[in-house]
Image 1 (cartoon, rainbow over the protein chains, first blue to last red):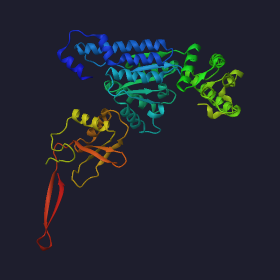
Image 2: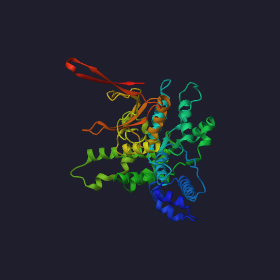
Image 3: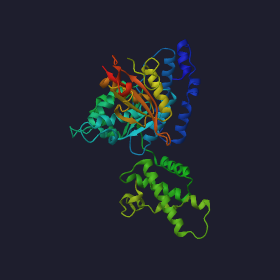
Image 4: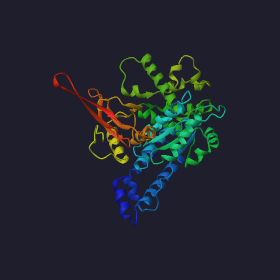
Length: 314
Length: 129
């Protein structure tokens, strides 16, 4: 909390200008960034706006002495791979920091490996280490359902879950836990661990991107690296996206990023073998149709299956 | 006898809010925090027992306070101090050290004077409960 609000609470103001609070807190800036940098994800943005509004009102209520408790802010993000869960978690950390609900606003991103140990007595110190690091910020547990393995009752994941639950309850002022994972597996995880469900107030679902949105994402990614698609390449990319979607291991934006990485590789190779004489900036930054059409996706197979270029695949 | 060692040793004992503020200062300068405890507060005893590993990657004092609480639970009747270590090349040393816990009844430091050759005096100190 800033000193301003603590002064306010002493006098207990009778009215609060929400719009002014909104501007002063810097929340507007985070939401604007969210709108500009993230393509699509309308329901997610809507939920975040609602959450921000709730927290803002809650803070105003606090300053007028109407509420004293910290609201439960633990969240779960569910959605398919590559739908921007980590990116949104990062924004969320910034948002909560601006609103004064976490002190430092850093994001600690972990998976099962960082929390669960390999032998008895190894898990608790490991989990505590991570929690200590996350204090004052946001702990992001990716693929959280791996913590719980019902088929193995000796699994140490249960120990990590117990420590997490305890900290989520007792240290609500100190950190916010965000659990992320695929929707169906998360549902199973929550039904097996009712403690989590009741401690998590906000469940946010991430929808898949549409083809149109993925194309815009591709262009934004390339733009960030000072590349661009020419007209024919744009059409090829569009076709690529709809074909890629039907093939296995489709991971939304992440598949697009990998495809673009490979396209850049082919472009570099093409320039290297075919170029006669000096190249200008335009030639160096244009991704051509042939760079994208060379992908295996167009022949009905996955790039992953190609034996020669395993190094390209992330 | 009240043991005075490290920073703030002539002030009244710091409470948890003040300790938190000091740790925030240390973390702000990117110093690593270590917690150590001992039942032998003799000034020559520089090697106290470590409580866990030094914490190099914290962002917030709460992480240290959690460890300190655990340490107090286990060693509440001993001396506990917090060390802040600066890993910057050229320093690589403890920059700040202060006591955060002391036993309810502190031991005495007893002086022993001994006669030696040619009426010389030898002095020694030891900690006595």
